[in-house]
Image (tube, rainbow, N blue to C red; front, side, top):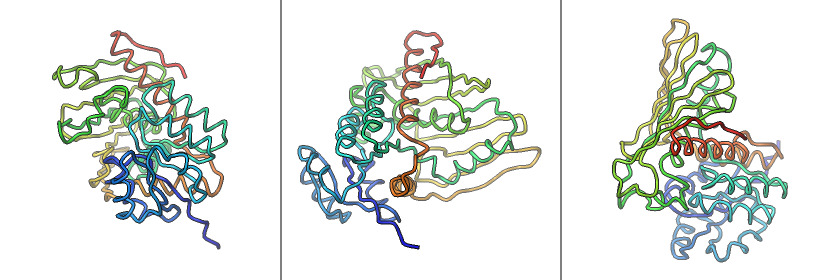
Length: 340
């Protein structure tokens, strides 16, 4: 059987996530290859082009030239969320498929325009949710989907990381670029993974936010706790903060048992699924692997075979709607209905 031509990618934005995770992932890809880099910093782009053996690099001022390159079929957008819309819409208008980091945008209006631009141009838009391809998360999903846990009554989940001046990217505290604080950066994983496991969308949000360090977090929240109600009766209780060390988990409770995945969302460490189902203990370990290569290859496969992607732009847009409701509930101190 003939091997499909590898899909050529341009990576837009060369910050921490690109340098440390996305660019190295291409060496582990079977269906994708790195063709180009795009950055505001010409010298950085040139240095990383040489390091990761890309064919060419561009500045953001030359983005149009990048989009005219016939060897590029897809762009991976790794800029801050407030810049996602511009790079996505321009790529779509050039006929390029778009894999975009989470959250999909900084606002609901931006994500809606991104989805519409890609729909109008007939190109794929995928939100970079790694958990859809990670074995431990897929195992957890199978236990929910095949009924092993019975009816799912409640999910508890959290993702936190300590914000450290001089280490954490400064733009994370800029609402125009980040869209918000840890709820946007980290909590979006809690929201998306919970509804992916449940197979349904929440209809109501209740939330509370806080700022212990009012000077540092004057423009975004320091932490958020939230509760989501689903049509089936499922309740998801979640939280996210920039005031605690890196930690994450997802704990699923059903009528036939429970399971927990921890760490749930970071990609560096071994994962462990524990639980008890119908009286039998569960304890499985999953080695850390290159989740970025998995998602890049999955998107390349969808392009090669003209297939839809599960974590598409609409899923990313729905998460933006949910995040907006969480923020609104925290602001007004009342439950907020979620309308898609």
